[in-house]
Image 1 (tube, rainbow, N blue to C red):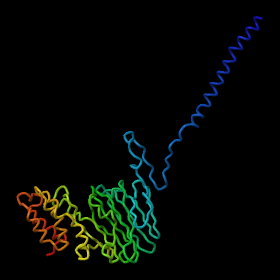
Image 2 (image 1 turned 135 degrees about the vertical axis):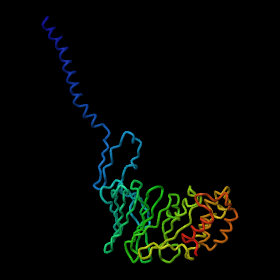
Image 3 (image 1 turned 30 degrees about the vertical axis):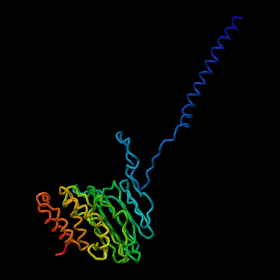
Image 4 (image 1 turned 180 degrees about the vertical axis):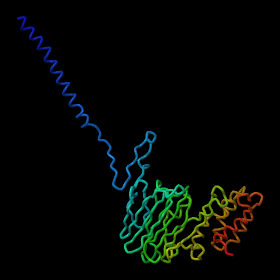
Length: 335
C-alpha cells in the first residue's frame, strides 16, 4: 500500500514537470517564427543600375527628407513645351532622355582642377545632325530645369536649360540640334528673383514665326544699388540665328513689350524719398523708357528728384554720369 502511494506521488510530480518543460520548449522554438511572421516588413532600398546608392543617413540627419537625397531622374515625362526638373546628383552614368528622334543626356563631371567646380554636361543629338554639347558650371544638387520647344515655323526644336551656378543666379543656356540655326548659346545669368518672364516660357511674341527668348537684364543688378534695388531690371529679347544669340531688344516691333513692362516704373522712381528710389528704381525706368524712344522725358523726371549731395556715392561717383555711360555702353542709348 505504501509502495502504491509513493508511485502515485512521483507520477503527480514528474508528469506535470515534463509537460511544463515540453510546453516551454515548444514556445522557445515557435516564438521567433511567430514574431517573424507578424513583424512589419523591413524597408528594402534597391539602387537602379544608373543611380548611385543613397548614402547611409547619419544620426544628425534623422530629420532629412527623402527628397533631400541625391537623385537620378526627372520629375515627370519629357514633353514639348512642358518644362521638367532633371536631377543628376545621384547618377553614376549619364541620364538619357528621349523625345521623338531627339536624344538628350545629362551628367556631372568631377572638377578638372582645384580652381574649377563640378561641371554639368548636357548633350543634345538628333540622328543625322552634329552633336550639340552644353558645359555648365551648375550646382548639381539643386537640379536643372529643362524645356524643349519649337524654334521656328519649320518645326526645328531647341532645348533650354536653366541651371544654378555660384550664388543665387540661374544660367540660361540653349542648344539647337537641327535646322540652319543649330548650335549652343548662353543667354546670360539672372537672379532667382527675376524669373517672371522665364516662368511663362519662350514664345513668338511678334508673330514672325521665330521664337523670342526674354530674360531680365542682369547687368543692372547691384550696378547702382549694393542690395540689388527694388525694381525689376529691364527686359532683354533674343533671337537665335545661325547658332548665335542675337539681341533684338531695340527693334521697333518689340516696343509694345517694353510698354507693358513700363508699368509703374515712373511712379516708383518719382516717389524715391531719401534717394532710395533714385538709386533703386530710376535706372530701370530710364532704360525702359529709352527702349520706347522716351529717354529725354524720363531723364527730366530723374533730374527733378536727383540731389547730387544725397544721391552720389563713392560706389558710383556722379550718379547721372554713371547712368548715362552705363546705358550707352549696354545699348540703351546710341551715340
